[in-house]
Length: 182
Image (tube, rainbow, N blue to C red; front, side, top):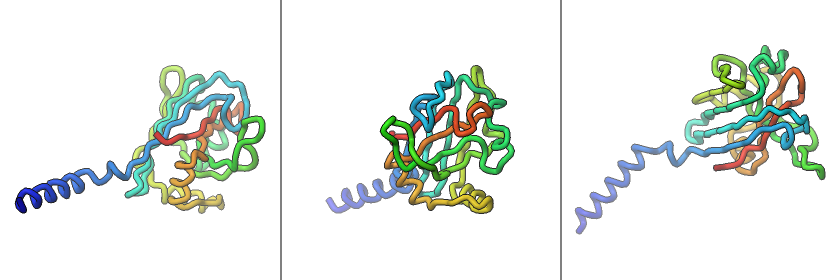
């Protein structure tokens, strides 16, 4: 009987060691449009965002699929900036009209680079194993306020983070959507 119990304990420990990241992954999703975002733009563009956070290693995977906008539509001055034209923001809340009210805090920049690719009818953004701490160091270097990883994950869990796509047409954001935990 004792051997059986020890064997089960060893097997459980091996499974835990073999797959430690699974328990540390958090998944979030957003649907982006020009109506339910940071401002009503009535843009016909749409998109989806899938975010995976590895809380053990403080890494973020991002997958955006945008339709109705091209890479050339992205806000030129932000394309060349270290923080890029697409961001995750925290807004203090929604106003009576259902729109996000007040100022925002940049929660995570998505710098322009090789992760941005043209796709049929739009573009995609893929950033894998994106280092949260390195992103915050870039923001701090540009005198942007920064948050801790713990504040970031808490805001995600509270549904306070919004994905915002800044374009030449709508500098404050053409399409956006709030992230929800999956």
